[in-house]
Length: 156
Image 1 (spheres, rainbow, N blue to C red):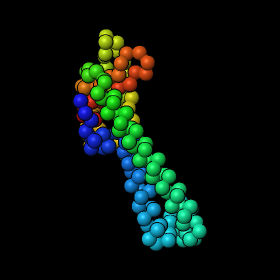
Image 2: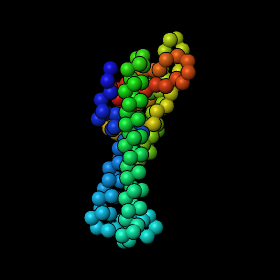
Image 3: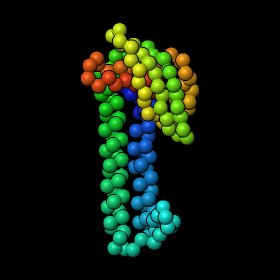
């Protein structure tokens, strides 16, 4: 079983935020280099001195690298998890969304044990279509240790 990258980025909050971070920082770096200006939260549009431009570009490069590494790590972890996890049936027990993010809560049974879980999600159309009481397919990790799980249809 393999994750579908587009579904993962649209539905998984961690994967979505990390890739958006890379894009935003890249735009900031290009605009700053091309115009000599950057945006400050408190002072608005600010002219960057030439000496500070190098420092700004290094900071932006580090932020972009951190976002990229975080994104690759999250997608790789999801890929490994999906290949090892067991599929079982579950039920959505709650959906809490605020603006573009939220949590989906669900319960499921694996190896005769009833479990419940909550995943951070990006509020995509597929996530918004989930309803309390809806049956879902769940991918559950091995018994013992950390009991991780995902709603299969959001990733595969």
